[in-house]
Image (cartoon, rainbow, N blue to C red; front, side):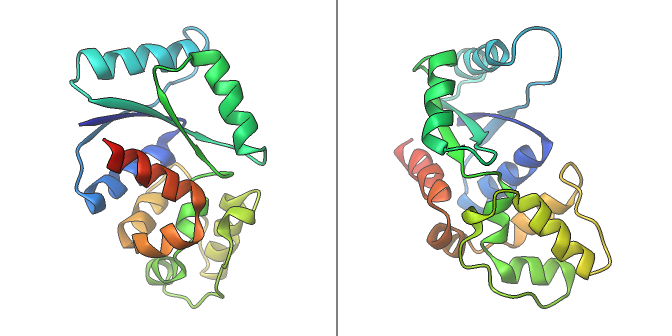
Length: 175
């Protein structure tokens, strides 16, 4: 089993669906606000996942939010040390969802234009919301939408378009 500490509920929902598609067992934790520094919580969750939950490895899945992924990774390493693997998602996990237009079309029941480089969109959740508006809906990060799109994803398509997804898969396969 692999442990993941993620930033929010949409990341957790997408990750749980991806785990089903890849056929791996995972355990997730989402640090909630309050009760100490965020990085202290990440370390605490990682220790719990390794020691009490029987995870072989733990990964912190972190969005880069319009910043350089390398810079973010260096900053996180400085804060939490080297005991936890860090996978940086370029901008946000919605980049991975944008990589498969057919998954979005199937969910929204509309036709959309190809998105050749989803990791080039600084705010991919805004791009998704624009697509949802064309279908007369709104995209809710914390709702069911991320998981529903993730269920439909063609992982080969995501892998072709998103370097951060390839890095994520490499972590999984290294386990």
